[in-house]
Amino acid sequence: MIKRFTVLLLLSGLAAIFVSLALGYVPDASLNQSALYYAENTVSDTGAANIVTAIIVTYRGLDTLGEVTVLFLTAAIVGLVLTRGAKAGKGKPMMASGELLTTGAGLLVPLILLMGTYVFVNGHLTPGGGFQGGAILASGIMLVLLTDPMKEFSHRLISVIESVSGLTFITIGGLGILMGAGFLDNSLLPKGTLGELFSAGTIPLVYSLIGLKVGAEFSSMLVSLSETEGS
Amino acid sequence: MISFIAIGAGFGLILIGLYGALTNRNMLRMIVAFTVANTGVNLVLVAVGHMFGRTAPILDSTVPVAEAASRIIDPVPQALVLTAIVIGLGVTALMLAYVYRLHQTKHTLDIAKHTELKW
Image (tube, rainbow over all chains, first blue to last red; front, side):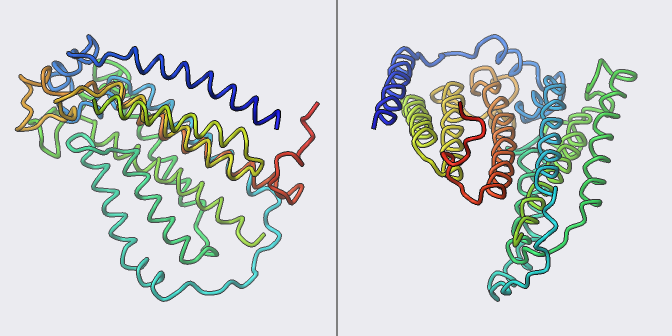
């Protein structure tokens, strides 16, 4: 009882702060300075139509590298925590999945993978990008795991995809120092015309690599989590 | 107006999530509550970047480069939230993995039974 009272007291204090924040909030009428810079100069700097993608891949590319590293670390820790001593209960036969799920997965998984690829290849033109596309790829893997939780995925293949795309990402970033304006600069390739698939320099390439890497990391987390099934 | 609704909903989600995380004993429910609070934070951040009567920061034939400064909303909060969502997913996966290990040691999901770090 006293615990619940303390919790409610804490939350009502927080709620008071939130209410005063929300009441004092005045929406901006015009863009602030950094947003104005991005709005006016993104196309001439990078050639990308999607400004959010330009910020993530080029202006703040270093932060994205850090983010991908954090994600890699998470996938590694999940794998480490879950696989230690989890080999015991392997081989318990499970009931087969229903006909609908199996057939539906066979039909849908290739389409989901195609959709994920589309989303990250067009990250510089449309809403979407590497992180979203990678998550869609992993949702295809998730569907496969739902139909057959005992399916053995090759951890080796997943980690090869992940390391190759990560290394290529860093190599392209490093080439930016030698041939462009700095680390992760996108001017290695021509900027092209705004709105075409092959435009915006290295942004589509880098974002596709991020998509593959994120997809591989999410898949490895899912596979590690599903390998605990039945143990 | 719409940004006030979104900000209010976001703050509400944060409070609901924290309440759930503080009052539930079941660790899986605590994780779900944290995810709810996380969604609330993301919603508030996106709502702060929203500006009435403007469109998404993607340039094409309907939003030409010359008019971009007066037609698009702030892209920076959106980029931030994209990062926050991905990191939130990583944190959720980590929490699930730790809960699995904790369940293996004590065969219970009740956090009150895990007393090793209590003083």
